[in-house]
Length: 121
Image (cartoon, rainbow, N blue to C red; front, side, top):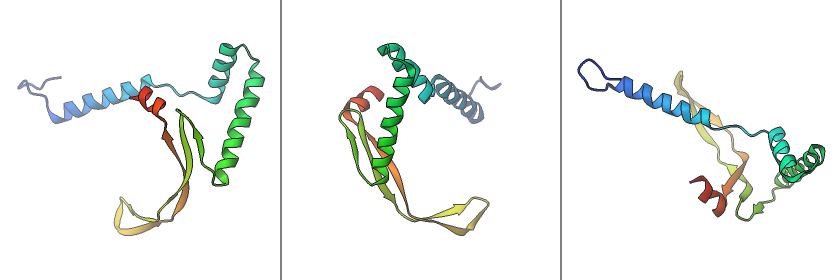
């Protein structure tokens, strides 16, 4: 990917970096609830419906706890908590002179635990 003068141009480097980024994102798979159920049922020898019921009950309990403002802590895995996002001013890229007020809102924040951080790094 060299230009006629033998020096990489900025455009060529940018394109090359984009291709590398695309390769990285293609290597990562999305694990759906269905895939997770299949994996657990096969590895533990349980019926998929039993695994599905347990996972759904777990997710429902997590959602209920978070909606009540509780903090969920799973040692070595991580912590889920509800945080308040402050009001901020946004800008429309097409008309930057007009400020847009983005209201304060609640959001779920996840902080990975020590074991997960080590595995990810």
